[in-house]
Length: 250
Image (cartoon, rainbow, N blue to C red; front, side, top):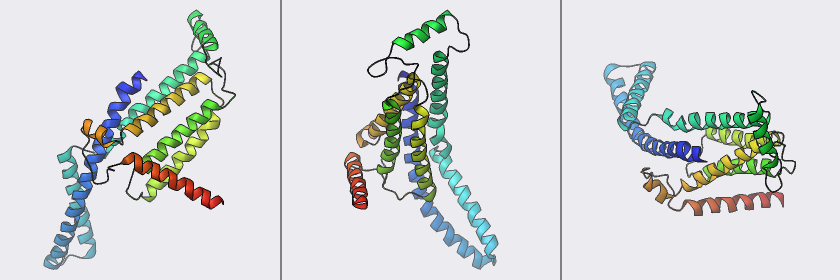
């Protein structure tokens, strides 16, 4: 949790900061595109451009203006992926480290056996042995539900209509979250415990970062798409979905 607090939280805040600036850039870009269309139409009449020349010139101008805006605001879209590039390797490396502790890799020396013994007797509640799988499936199911919760939270906290790509990615990660449940049910409990606590941290992190007060505290610019009462909006969305599925099944 210390690693997540020190590494991923700052990157999550920075990601939201860049996304907010990009939203303003896109709004400004829409106005610029309208002006460029007018200028292109005038140029077509003045210089007798054909459709291909006009289209190429317009696209070149759009790219140039977009690049200038991105440089001016210092908000390249790639910066929104920094969180993933830091969080994913951290998640993978810690998962592999825990797996190595369970299987006493790379060397089965005294220290490895001691750690294995500590994991074997250092469980809790329904999991007395952390090197065995969670036969109750409580942790795997919680892990899957938390991941689904993160996806739904991100979906419900937005007011803009999602694009086809965004819809595809949302459904893809929903499916992946469900697929991870049977995978989590066959790995050692200590690994699933880390996965579950990591997802729980991520859920709370996402829940906090939709708050306007927290966003202003973190110097994230207010945007037109930001919700004044995000938690009320999320609860309303959840109620609507429950009502939709209950009406559909009745």
